[in-house]
Image (cartoon, rainbow, N blue to C red; front, top):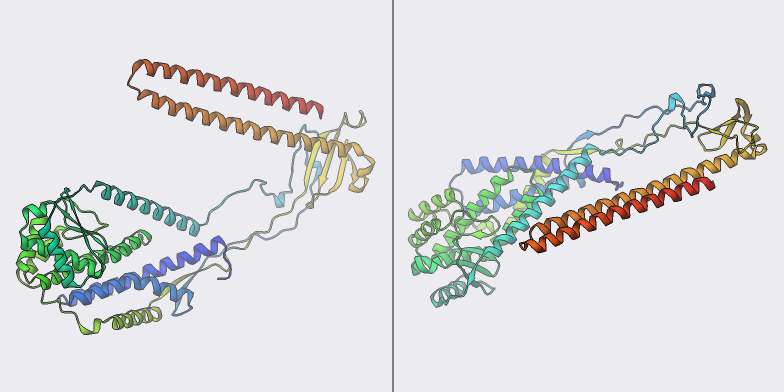
Length: 503
């Protein structure tokens, strides 16, 4: 783990992802079997077990992989390397007799392309896909939540009876923070917007009796006392980051149902009126068609709502609402620690090995041959020259009209060095010309985009005369851009030709 390269980081991350998926799947399946075997389990115990299962896999996967605990399934990711063969000298006789431009040639046994290739490994592609998905889901969630909050139509209507009930229940439930009650004209279920705000539709004042209003507020205050809004935010974050684990959806569904049942039980304990809460739920259920997932609402899903109403009417909600003594904070911390330790030493981990995955392939060395005319440089004494460079870039030998010379004899023929310098200067000029020409093309694309946007805006002008004038302006501007582009291209070509003639 000492190497912090991108490849090593992605492999470590994927090792954690696979291990977490395995651990969380086994924990959720065990919890599902337990719930089936004990359908009359305490709702408080269910709540604790669900929350432990939600976060335990995150810690067990990390401790097992990076704490060197438990046992791992190691998957090697090896790279096949080609043997490093020695470069062979270039056979000069295989070159064409004369060429008009520089021609790089490599030996057959070490032939490699000079272009730089970009390759992305499978684990990097998976990590990139995860990151893109997380960013998309985050932006989507933020946008939807912002749109919902903006859609709330708050109104200021005096409601002394409701305010009095809220204060009395807050004192009874011993809430530390002051709670604000907001009324909206929207048709929705009463909900907790944040740790200090309860949102209630105006319909609650019009269609609910005083007893039902009291049960409604008691239920929402129970959410605030339990800080269910924090667990909801954590669940939403995990839904985004751990989207690849489908079994988490069952956990979130169960957590929602258990949370609502606990708050129903607390509301009944405060008001001592289970019938009023049941009637309130039935009444509220008919107010809305859908409810957002990012707020703690009183009645958001039809199937759990029906079950809750039946439990309230039969007074079954209180039978499983007794909080066991062993669910004290210290006992819960001990349970979490025990689950984590047992999972680390019993559940397997998936470890990707990267020790052999990133060995760099040795670059094959090659000789290069450059063929060019030297008629002018040698004042007519020679027609063409072929220069051979070794893998270090030095001239090892050269040919003048098919006569071979050693590299040390290059000083006797100074015109060869001048020809090489001239060719290098020409290549440099071509590169500069290509860069400047590309900038002009990018400028042309930018101008076209600007004209297209202006044309789109002009089409929306309602006044026909102003629209016509604007269209004429855009057309003239486009013609001006074209003329300016042609002028710059001609000027660039003239400068290039002028430099080539000088050289």
